[in-house]
Amino acid sequence: MISPRHLPERWGRLDVTVRDLPPALLLLALALLPSFRGHGTQLGGLPSRPFDAVAVVAVALQCAPLAVRRKWPVVCLALVSAGFALDQLRGYHSPAGTALPLALVSAGSYLDRHRRTATFLFSLAYVALAVALVRLGADEPPSEFVTFYLVLVLAWGFGAWLRSSRAAEAERRRRVAEDSRVAEGTRIARELHDVVTHHVTAMVVQAEAARCLTASPDRLDRTLTAVSDTGRRAISDLRHLLDLLNPDYGRPGNGDPGLDSPDPVPPVGSLLALVERTREAGQPVAFTETGTPAEPAGSADFVAYRVVQEALTNALKYAHGSPTSVHVRHGTGEITVEVGTDGPGSRDLSPGGNGRGLAGLRARVHVLGGEFSAGDRTGGGFVVRARIPAGTAS
Image 1 (tube, helix red, strand yellow):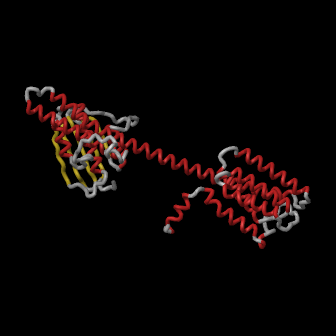
Image 2 (cartoon, helix red, strand yellow):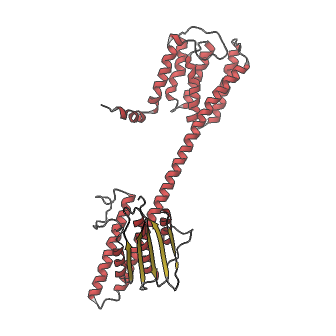
Image 3 (cartoon, helix red, strand yellow):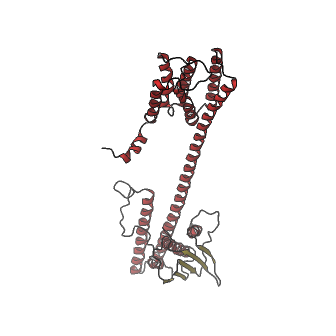
């Protein structure tokens, strides 16, 4: 048995013709009731006449096409107009005449092509109907015909307004979806930059060092092991990003590289492990962490990790072997990060850059309402500083 709460959903899945059929049948039934005959629209004021077989045809022509008013608006308008003309010329004055403004609203709302042509032809047909009614003895002044035409124009205009409103809403949703797609692409690009640059830079530095250790098998073995561990961590981090792009990635038959790792995501908060890996790559790093992390830290902990990671990557690339210091302080409602090196650093901070590297970090920090700077420090060297509000929602 279908639950009542599921009925609207089931109804919405039906073909639009099926959903438009009940109102058409309801108007048809009302128009055929004896008590409603002769109480409809009277254009021209011709004398009323009793219902006959032709009246049934006129009523059917006006009501039945409403079932296809959204699917075939031109067909609906043409048939309803013909039925309305027959109704008025014969003097039935059926309530089915209500179908004409409904058909005009639907045509104005759902007609995609040849809208001006349809408007012109309908206006021409209305003038022809008015002339025919006058010849049959209509005693109403021309102002009555003009007034009724303006009512019909208003119905068309209301349909056109509905159409423009739908188009504006569709455009708004498209822009929101496009902005979301671009923002997500930018975020993933930054993640790829942070992950790949850090790990690959460490692997390159370690591999270069290994070339000089052929005389020391033990040190060579440790260096190559570090290269292998760094590569596996890079694959693990990349797998995590691919999971964001495609949740089926990593399942059987979906291209999983097959290398297992107990840590599928960047070790947020594991700054000491990050520093140790940088030291293994040959960079002397002094690390201090003070204060108590906020609970919950939200996105601040992750951004702080990325700031340290990118700063150490730059130190490896541009100041390899130079003394580097990392200081992280967990304060009240914020995390302060400072990474300094005695050598030069990357100055990728141009507003028109590609949004990655230090420029990407600045954007990350600013999104959380923090402060970020990178540049030369007094006495020589390069320093990266960030103040990141903590305790925000992820």
